Length: 320
Image (cartoon, rainbow, N blue to C red; front, side):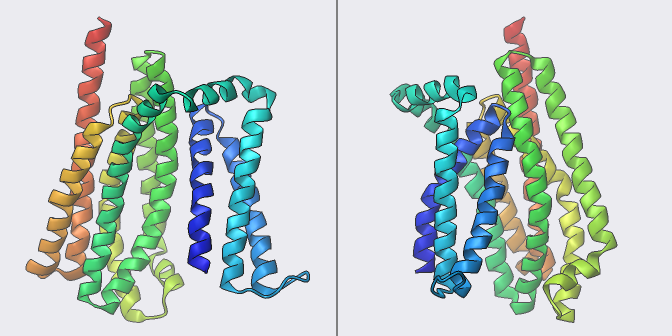
């Protein structure tokens, strides 16, 4: 029942995410952040009540956790919708949303912009899934070490991703004003900020690498292997930051199809086969699998950056 309930709740989570992207796009991210924090607090409280049977409720265990998640997601979506359509500050936007929903042309435009982004993100995410499968072929210790490092890498990724979303919003607003100077400024400074964050996190992780691995496991073999993989995690930060930043810059200037094609080549034609070759044919094991990440991510980043430069030259000529 837990997975069925959580599966139903994803429908409401998707609705919330749509509204979140909208409010982020008009430079009001505090709205969604506040609702998410309140929703998480409600979910924690609901878990305590329903999992353990507190305040007169029956003890429901894992099913209670699913119900709490469902209720919290429904509530924050309802509050979000009410805020957008009832707040005086959002009146103009609410009217535009209603018109867009009823417009086949607008919905077609959203789909045309959205599906390449969705495919690109799916290709990138599934590359890491294939890496986990290959790590499992090597053995339990390798898979466990891989999972430790992937979990830590998600902290790096999410912080950089949040900043890259902000870059996309600022770039899209500047592009809408036909202010190419600001587009260049946001892209350049944004990448430097992403690189600074990843470098800082890498230094911190290096300094506390043994403690970080020890949080996840008490196995000396898994811990030692995870620590050795940290250096490959550091190696792909440049490429990951580059592709994250300029993929979102390209989204901001509405050039999304090339991202999809580049992701397919970089991840499925280059990264996954490279990981398999180095891991199994070259005999490097889990370290060889992880070599595929810096190769694929860096190639994707270089392509996105080159496409961005090409687009700017084209737009500059159109202005002249």
